[in-house]
Image 1 (cartoon, rainbow, N blue to C red):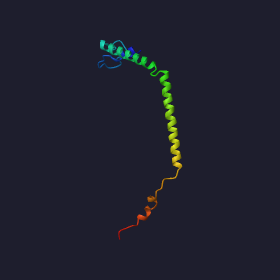
Image 2: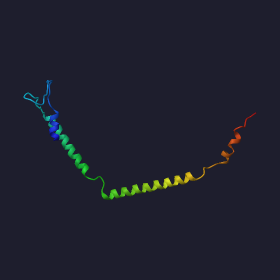
Image 3: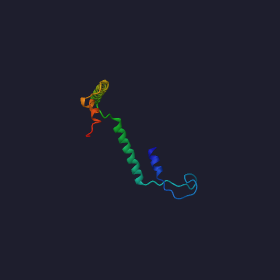
Image 4: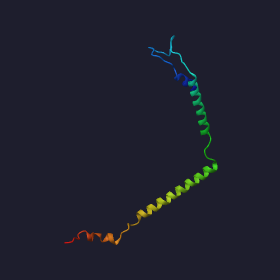
Length: 110
């Protein structure tokens, strides 16, 4: 089906009025060797891609190790979130400088 669709794409059509794909004087398909080469090359590439995609990228041991690393990241993120929640509940740091800052607002040299 891929070969047929590839070959039917390359039709030598001139400006002919009416339906050129049916009838006694329809336009015939002219297929050159280069078109066959391109279609075969596409099918070979597609077959190679299917072979590559059908094999797994990781071994079961590598996959288990990766899952363990992901679980550790999730645990670290949970600890960080828990720490952030605790810090939010704590009162804000307040220095004596900030407490006495309002006294300098009206100070002038006069």
